[in-house]
Length: 74
Image 1 (cartoon, helix red, strand yellow):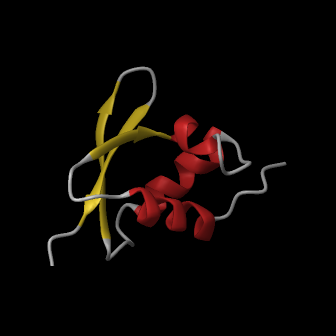
Image 2: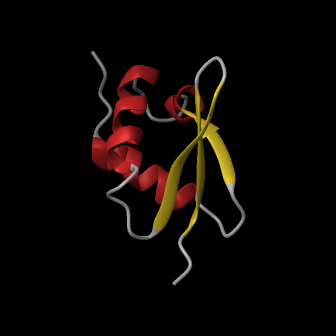
């Protein structure tokens, strides 16, 4: 069972984001968060529209979804 939570993924995204775009995949996030890539991918989909500090958008889909992450312009 995955021990990852939506809050954990959100904290990771905020900590990882910078002013330059970062491209990542769910399985890359999973490494340090003790969760499954499937659970992380579901949270990324939900968080895509619910983050105010960072911008998260689906960027590409080859073997798995790639996400583009950066700090919002404020």
